[in-house]
Amino acid sequence: MLLEVKKLHGGYGPIQVLHGLDFVVEEGSVTALLGANGAGKTTTLRAVCGMIRVEGDVIFQGRRITGMATEEIARLGVAHVPDGRGTFMELTVEENFKLGAYTRRDAQVQADFERMWEWFPRLRQRWKQQAGTLSGGEQQMLAIARALLMRPKLLLLDEPSFGLAPLIVQEIFGIMRRIREESGVGILLVEQNANLALELADRAYLIETGHIVTSGPAAEIRQDEAIRRAYLGY
Ligand code: ATP
Image (cartoon, rainbow, N blue to C red):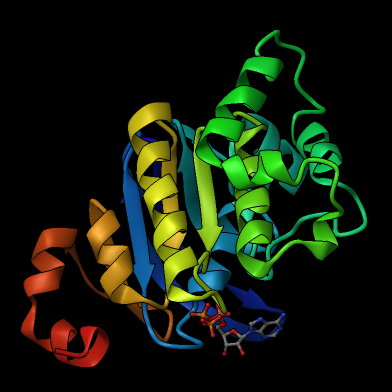
């Protein structure tokens, strides 16, 4: 198992947001966390990558990482693409790529750049452009590419569709499908758009007020009557 989370509790100071979550992400799979605004999805990603103090067990590749520093967790192979993107706006696309790969000492960096150009041709076209001047969709692509250049084993993606036009969202989800198929990176995806998330995901968990209320293979969750009514709109 790539990631196992058990009895995860946490929040912000005295405010408890997560009330004992259990979930897993298998190697090379996409796991979606669904739920309404404020359910605790973003907080869950922050908990996994060490941004907030939590109780319980976060086990990454068999190793307990609960309480470790964010940098240490990142070094082990967990990359986080926060909501609001997380690119360096004043730097160019090229510089953002280089920052993504800067801790790496292996000889594959150039090959990975080329792979990113193949997955994200728009970024190659805008290589010398400042990230802050890219469209929202391109910034999202850059944030994902930068995270992948760390060669993570697990990618935490927070609302990649947020604020983007439907066509761009389709493009980004298409790229995510390729990432899963061609790279073997596991993805933990937080997404408001449950239809899209369930089309892509292998497994999904539904969070309500810091509790997991439903989980299962994405194909089954899509058929669930209550979920269809509340989250899929049909
Ligand atoms: P959304 O899609 O709206 O981001 P979410 O499911 O990701 O929803 P979270 O962002 O995890 O929800 O928020 C869960 C709860 O934690 C909310 O009640 C929110 O107000 C609270 N919260 C989030 N960030 C903080 C913070 N930095 N300080 C205090 N409370 C916070």
